[in-house]
Image 1 (cartoon, protein in one colour):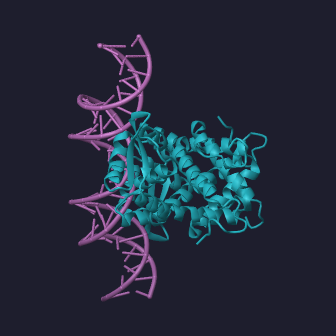
Image 2 (cartoon, chains in turn brown, green, red, orange):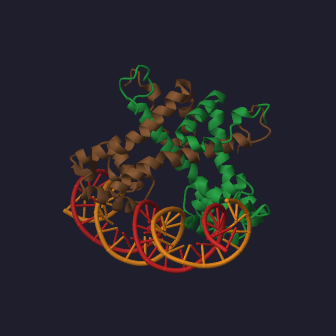
Image 3 (tube, helix red, strand yellow):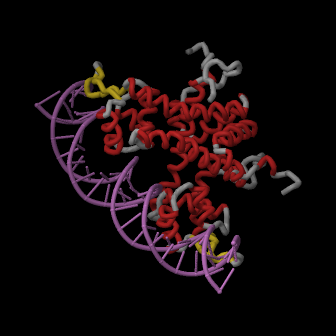
Length: 168
Length: 168
DNA sequence: AATTAAGGTCAACCATGTTGACTTAATTAT
DNA sequence: ATAATTAAGTCAACATGGTTGACCTTAATT
């Protein structure tokens, strides 16, 4: 439990500030999905297809189970969307040679092209926001949003602060 | 158009960093809606009801049209959800005395109580994230997310940086 | 008096989520 | 070798919350 009133350094933990965060997240998410949605329409696809295309593009060779963990939806729900993307050759499938039960998913050329068309609108939005806000603000943005994400999933977000780390 | 590769100060505008932003927003939104969804289930309500309750609570006396502008959904879609909240007395309605076509919406006692139950889980999530990230990071978070929101809607997010401003 | 604005309503449809039951094939454990 | 487990697929029924389109009422504005 977090005390919203009497904590000593509660300067930025007041209800008004917390509500501002809630609203920012709502509006930002709403607007961030708007542009891709319009593009998807032209292809007869929906937001759910975008999510699949995005994460397959980002994680080439990802399996169904891994995708389900990221999306937090059921296999049956994914099946409709993924099935359609396989039929229409946006995504390719092949058995993992090491464990032939697993299907490795990758984007086709067509899939990569659509992924780029969709995601570039979102990247441009972020690029503008990052540029306008400045590098320090970007670091703050990351720190706060990472704190909003459930701890188990924090590792999924690639740590760019480590990108010059020797372990890479 | 934003050049993602050859801009001189593109240190944090590289594709990897932009994709990290996209993913943070996806995961954060996913997790931020999870807890309220579970509570709503107990009342036989859904996420759409939460949004209505939230924004009515936040803007007492708000009209249907204003609510539609915030939510960016159709009147018919809002009608189902709002109609149910009116029937079940979570929300009250009264004609605006200055323009009796307008219906002013407010939360009932029951509505306020549910609003608090739902929103407090999200506020606690933000309070933890803000506390862990620190005040500077919070300011950066705000600056970046404001940049993600469409310019027309930026004014909707109450500017807490102005809270000690003499104009208030 | 005519037009506009705010809101309401009916109907059909669509996208995307759910639960539950059951199957197949491949791998792993006993 | 057999049994158990895991990964994936499939069928069906249903819920939620969006959409479009047509049309209506009431109140305010011109």
